[in-house]
Length: 212
Image (cartoon, rainbow, N blue to C red; front, side, top):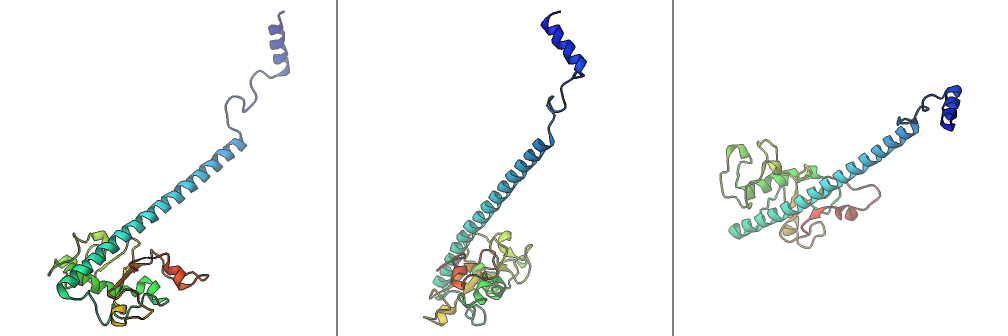
């Protein structure tokens, strides 16, 4: 009997006629747990990256829109001698007052006035068509307006779904610390509605996108 025959006989007598469980390629419980943990970690990394990219894209879009709105206001001023201003809305909104200037809910009235002035839509309802001269370069896209679909009381909304802040407070209160530019202030809080409890209002403003 050869050595190979002896080895085969020894294996048969021991009862090990097939490889033990797991030796043939099956996953053990520990291996499965490790694989699942790796998948969860990778999914978390992907989701956080997607959120960062979306927020960065929204901020870039807000910067572009603020520049376009500012240009529209300057074009309006060239025709009318003054930027869009209203004693009951834009001239009373104070950007540097907490929480007045940091809560987008306070921007809606001045936002509606601004939209009517620079869009040429004097009744504030795009669904009725544009009645006068518009100053915004190109058409205001539906995703830039609230409500969407178009309806009455429209205002320009930022990429975070809120009204842009628009104030001419400084124009009628020159040198007052509650305003900034001598013509108009325009800003977005980038989706936030209030400062954190651990920060000052000025620190909160540092996260905004604004024209001052």
